[in-house]
Length: 111
Length: 115
Image (spheres, rainbow over the protein chains, first blue to last red):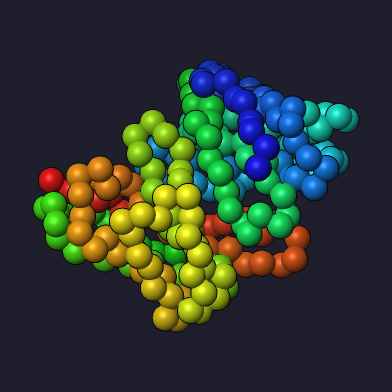
């Protein structure tokens, strides 16, 4: 699976948009970009995934650059409950559903 | 996610003891997984199963074994626990739909301490 690079930590003001970047410069054509988050000591939670088009769901938006070497997860109106570690994962369809978690980004939403 | 439950939630044991962690799911998913998480690190895959009686090793299977006797249950065993198996253990499930959208649903975790 392609390696990803994320900032160690980020801060965001409550009510503002949180933009979390992820670099995946070695991504292959058959690999998808997934985002999960983990609130302290709880099980990880799926957020969103995409291949090359931008995606949006009720939780977040995913913006993938045209060359697919990087992406940004956007939480449009961050709340205190969004404070968590956010993991960007790249994996192919045929990986057997294995998820390889790196160290992720600790997002802290401040009041 | 309440559809994936783990028991026990916390366990303290001694070196050399046999320990079993249980995972149950009501989501009707075929695939189940066991991960461990160490402080400050991401999750690492121990074992996974795509169906009843199907068992596959993950990246850190040494010292662990699993059993998948029913679709809804996947148990993880430590035959002889050692202190470096102290970690937070997560069970997860997924439903393969032939696309990459087969996201995983995680249980609440089991905190295991081996003294």
